Amino acid sequence: MKQPFAGGGADADDLDAVISAVLTGSRLLVAVAARSLAAAQDRVTLPQFRMLVVLSMHGETKLVTMAELLAVNSSTAMRMADRLAAAGLVTREVNPHNRRESLMRLTAGGRQLVEEVTARRREEIAAIVSRMTPEQSRALISAMNAFTEAGGESPPGPRYPLGWPDAP
Image 1 (spheres, rainbow, N blue to C red):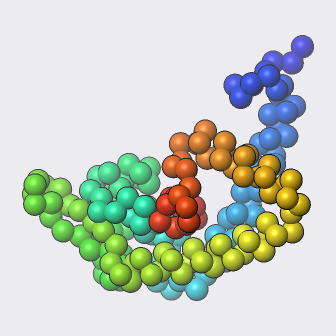
Image 2 (cartoon, rainbow, N blue to C red):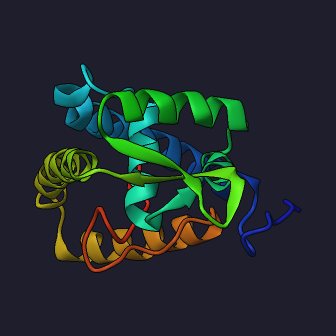
Image 3 (spheres, one colour):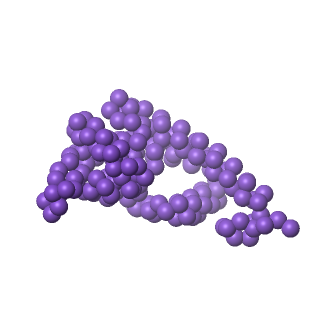
């Protein structure tokens, strides 16, 4: 008898099918993300854009917290923040309550960049989803919500980018 996997009574063959479907879907989503960021790639890298998106969701954030949210070390987050500050997309200031901490937030230009890239991404995803049946669309909503919840992502807000962490 096949062993169930942690998600419930499905067996290893079901798990393999789920993993294959998610990997295939992730390739499509990465391609969409890359295309949506293409116009901004002269200004930011994909990891830097992810930092901008996290800032758009969290607002003013400590550098150490940002490193945790991005799953990078503090020195990597600091270099990214320095580059984004030099590009005028974020501001970094000393925390007035703890002078050893650095706080960062989006500038108007950073917010605009996140909104522009996200709008392009939404348009491309809308074109893909419009080719699905209503039943497929409802199943996709349920599956993606379950997937993001299981992965620890915040649920989507009423509209991206400011209610998500937008995925690059």
